[in-house]
Image 1 (cartoon, rainbow, N blue to C red):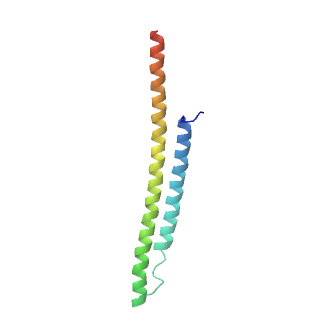
Image 2 (cartoon, rainbow, N blue to C red):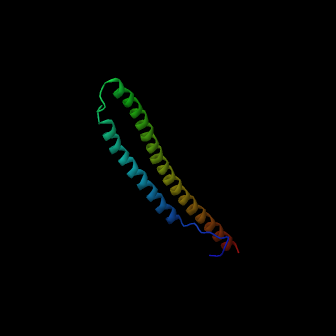
Image 3 (cartoon, rainbow, N blue to C red):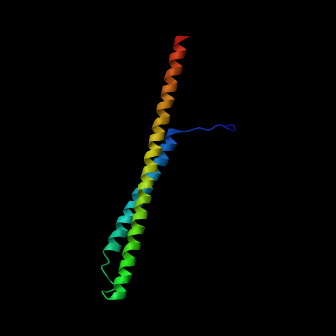
Length: 108
């Protein structure tokens, strides 16, 4: 392929989509495991004043971290969906172009 040219293969987009979806699914599963451990730990820091201050900070920070990881999993799934749609669009455009050329050729 010369410079200034590019080629899009729908099957490559589909393959990349599957990889992004697997990554999203793996992250979501890991997140569920992490949530169970983080939220299932109880309150090992105690119920005194210092423990309560630590618990509040810990709960807020862990919630923010879990939320960020969930957002990442959602974004990976969104990328997967976009790549899949792009592959379908490219394939549809190729088919429409082929149909148009066939019609032109048959009219000659």
